[in-house]
Length: 150
Picture 1 (cartoon, rainbow, N blue to C red):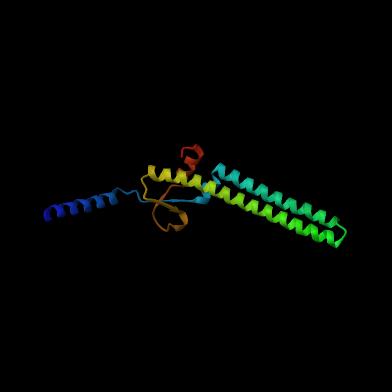
Picture 2 (picture 1 turned 45 degrees about the vertical axis):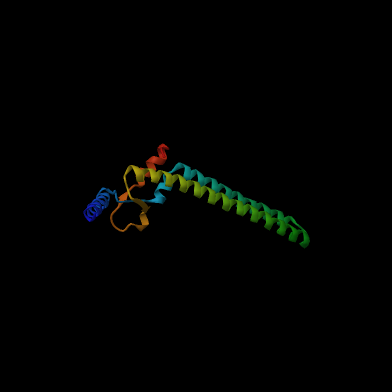
């Protein structure tokens, strides 16, 4: 019985050692470079920027309307209404930005997961946490995103 346990322990130890020897290591990704080369991310940025410019134009238009008002009461009512509208528009912009960032992140993460499996890596981290070593998979992830095979 003890002999069987010893053999089992040795076998498990060898399996653990073999797994370490087969492991692919750690990959790293330059997320900013991936974003810069991912057309979906660029389109999302443009969409958010366009909505931001719309909000700025909204405020310019409201300022012109405000200057045309002639009584303090009208100005106060206009300020109150505009503040509520601006807050709603600003909240919508923040929600859009968050939604787009999440969509971009999820697509990049899906592509990175596929590269992780294909390259037999143990983990993928951001380039900023790598001091020495690792495998740069940035270009592989960009290629996955460009071909849409993730």
